Image (cartoon, rainbow over all chains, first blue to last red):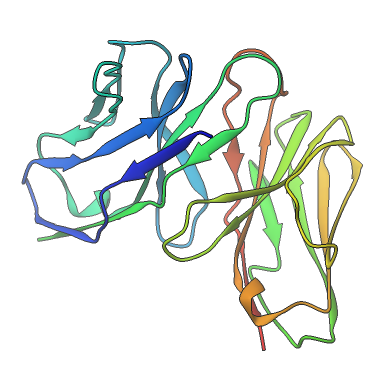
Amino acid sequence: GDSVTQMEGPVTLSEEAFLTINCTYTATGYPSLFWYVQYPGEGLQLLLKATKADDKGSNKGFEATYRKETTSFHLEKGSVQVSDSAVYFCALARSGGYQKVTFGTGTKLQVIP
Amino acid sequence: ETGVTQTPRHLVMGMTNKKSLKCEQHLGHNAMYWYKQSAKKPLELMFVYSLEERVENNSVPSRFSPECPNSSHLFLHLHTLQPEDSALYLCASSQEIGTGYNEQFFGPGTRLTVL
């Protein structure tokens, strides 16, 4: 079945550091890929998405590129801020019919001033 | 109210209690979802409703009983729970289900503790 694997956290970075959170997936066909973010005390919010190979999703300075050859969708940001502290979830969804979203376990990011 | 709201935000119950979680979406969506979020585990999809009809039930124990009286409201009725059921229960909604990705909008969750 489908699965998503993320790097375990927590990840602790200083403000303005470069961020990479690794995500790889297992799925047949061509799923859509997503990053969701969960701020403390809140539900998940869609951060960015990519629907086909080589697509780059971007939002709020975050980027991720759909790499089919390596089945990866790593999240990057050039300069993190304290306000980016949250839990980040990688996810995939198949197209066609009912779409079930498969989530990773989440990676907690803590940014210190 | 905007988006997806959930009540209560926190709930502590004994194993013999009966309680209900409530979710309301103010987005005009047609599909609603219940997820269970446990520490260090992927989100687990529990139930999916489309236009008040249940379309997915992911082998969830019968001590969890969903109800969707209309497309804006979703309930999760709880009875005789176990301590391992302690988790964050998230509700989500989307415009619809079907071909093409429909973004899911999540509520803040109910933190459930079973004693």
